[in-house]
Image (cartoon, rainbow, N blue to C red; front, side):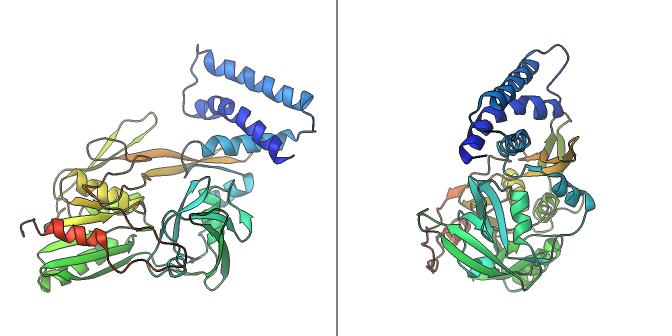
Length: 389
């Protein structure tokens, strides 16, 4: 089937199937409602017209699969339609290959870079937040899900992967060959950033981050730090629970986050006994690459007035996906739980506004970033006004 055929069919079919399938799953189709059934009738008419009147022969299975992909793509970037083989991969529980290139990705027309971990193969090659990934090993990403893209980037340490990058001019793509490496579960470093100011950089967040941050802060305090700058710009990895666990180091009392499902009660996640052992005045550096676990962490601190946020608006990526099987063996990888800020405002697909906005500079592909860090400079300026604990 030609690309023109696919575009026409997907455009017509996706909204219809949205009511028929996802609407049914989420419980919106209830006895006595006529509207969803009316759309089912329209869908039946559309399929009949396509198969009987379209100028080319149409493979209805391909049409349906294309429509399903288009439908789920319209929900959020992390949701995906999985083929039967892909669904089996999830059900098997098999671990992904240990090698990666240090990229966190989302979807916007193509796959897009959220962040490249510090000193990772992707970062060393110059990939940055906002870069579009046009192809992976020659396979176009125009119709590729985040789920599939993440798996294509993984492999054995030492193996190679080719990525075609677009930055700025779409007519001038850059092909970058990367060598996968074993990816660390957590990366935390610290240093003194000025008189009495400790700087903690969390480049990758994971289960060991809490212990690493505690250790870094203890060392910095011994070295004379009375204030902190914590940097979660371009921070990759970790579960949302890892972000909450990290927040418990800094927030002693209050609501850390809320989470909700479609039809369940809203759950409040609060602090507990022993939380908040680190009480130094602090600011938090964020940007568009602050997502997932680091974004939930930032939300908890900002929502409890524990830290000012300095930098750019975050991306708004705070949901948990669940596998929902379909009768033919395929499945939906569907966002079924989302996190909210401590005050109950949406975080997923909304993001966080910085207390003080500072834009990261644009950098042409192949050029090094500027030596000066405007965001850190503004943070130090802001922190200078805070009283030491």
